[in-house]
Amino acid sequence: MHIKLSQLIHLNCPARLNCKYRINFPNNQTTFELRSSVFKTLAFLINPFENDVQQFLITNHNILHHVGPLITTFAQNILLNMSNFPQFISETSQNSSESLIKSDNIQHHFTNIGATYLLRTLLIRNTNFITVVSSIPGLINSLIILSRFQRQKNYRQSEQNESLQPEQADLIRSESILSLGWVQYFGNLNIQLSLIKQYDYIHSVLLEGIGNCSGSFEENSRATINAVEGINWLFIILNEGRDWCDKNHELKKQVEEEIEIGGGIEDLETPMFLNSEMNDEDSKWEALQTKRIIVSYW
Image (cartoon, rainbow, N blue to C red; front, side, top):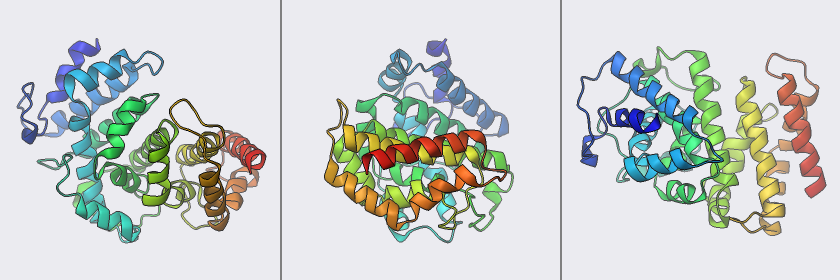
């Protein structure tokens, strides 16, 4: 099924790619929704334990350069309408204008959601692909931008996202946080260092995602769970290591200090005890598990 369906990836794909499979079609609401549905369906067809679909899309359809432009262009337009992004994100995003990940036109948010969803599934257990993703200027920054999208309504509403429903914004945030989590968990040590030191991953993604004491007030439980899992994975990788990444206790110590200074311990405890709309049982369980791991590895 994925072989037939993958042809629709090329529906109005970026002209600058000179893709031989490109299908020209009028850009309208129907086209945008169709592309999004194709991306989401392909994501459902991916089995992370059998990477045949992943590799087919990467090798035969240059999938990164078809979904990447949608994600980065959407993030750039969000950045123009938000007022409180860390300076390093704004500067790096502006400096990445010559990246291979540039889109020829602004896509509808339906397509952007589908592209983000597909990228997340492509990252699972795919260490080589993650190395490529992390090396492309602008893409990690774009995921960081999307991980904060409409969290506090800290943006100037624009015509582009007026029709975006709150649940769609929640999905964009949670999928972006999880994508960055997979990049971290299945990334090599250089990627761990880059995320922590260059991209301020701990503060700009993880602590923002669970932030109550820090004031970010993430209201979507799935986004909170994904951020808590990210902290969990970070401690596991740096303390235990994996085949693709050596353990690094010195870097783990730096992570501990940043989490403590940033109020991460207090924010982790919040889902355990507060009885609010966002703090469902999954949030509490994940927070407890992560707190246990942090305490055992501290």
